[in-house]
Image 1 (cartoon, one colour):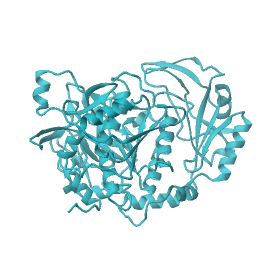
Image 2 (cartoon, rainbow, N blue to C red):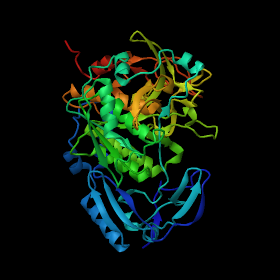
Image 3 (cartoon, rainbow, N blue to C red):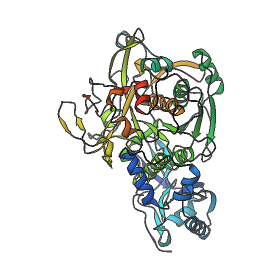
Image 4 (cartoon, helix red, strand yellow):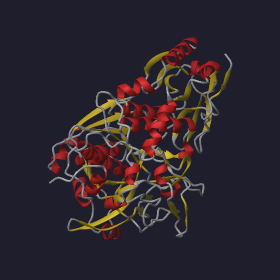
Length: 527
């Protein structure tokens, strides 16, 4: 069969990595094929209206979405035929998610996709990878959007930071110290804790939680523990490492923050491998979950746009567009490495998937309070821990309608029109010095980072959804016309970008005034 390159699938080695030889030809693994959507133009028109703030379309049911916009049955059949021709096994297929998961050996996948899989070693460890593009036979060129999973490099990092060792300088700067999530909810004037009838999906790419930790934490808070469910994706499960400095910190932070804000909601935690395929499949599993039916998704993992393939970014952005049509809000941490997003090439970078225009990108502040009131809030940029809120201007995604007319301010105070998608949209306390009191692997600790802001906003959205007839879904167009509902952050920078009145590329619109946010989203105040 003649093969041609799949556009956007090109890979290069990870920075500092080099090949140590060919991958074991008998190694077995799984690959996800993403098919094109039925009626993609119709869906595109629908989500474009939502992005412009037009709310006449009611959220679709997952069943209706699958029928109208899922993969075409003939395309699913074509992949089965292709798999058979190369001795690959169809493990799973899902029409609504437009995915077919194939299993096979390195040798079989090399032949099927015209690649030369090798082993690479580098600073991030060992991984199976490839260089160049995936090749597709002619008959699949017009039905496939992506082939993910041939390369199993770690795709994303969690965006949490532990509080640095106490010192006189840190203590002086911390002022009022750290906060429990309910204390932050009170400072940010959130509606009463709730979330009845809602499900919050949390995406995790490693680690796990212990039920005993969750029970003990909520007992300490005096709050009834939420119902927490573990959902396995692509063979991953809830596997706590026992190391509070590892990914367990991310998992338990997310559960405890979202659960403390919305204790009546179900917390569904989707565990997946940390690969491009695993990340996408976790998100689509959550968005199209007909059992738990989450109305909001919290994502605290990501990486610089330049470290993703175009096919992966397009696939995730399409998943977020599907979420918008279904009335599902996607909350994503904007990153913890300032305007460089942790790269040392001298350029500015934003974190993906926060940079998708269909994600509510969540940036970070440093918060001071006294007597139950906010006394100061600035951009989180902490030289002591080396962390700073992610933010800047995407090099991939176009300017969304709800950000038209905005300006970006650099650290020297100069302004310029915002030309592409600006990150973040909103913010909240993220400084680990003024961070969140949580429990991880049997120990009470303090964690910050924009990882904490995504579940904070997800909990708020869940509480708001519980008081609405329909979920808010793509919330940005409504928020960008409700500046009064935010604490405007005007001091600080994240490196190359500075805070400024109104939206800025450090803290977005600002931190939430929860009850005002609820009112802007159509929730009437309690009598």
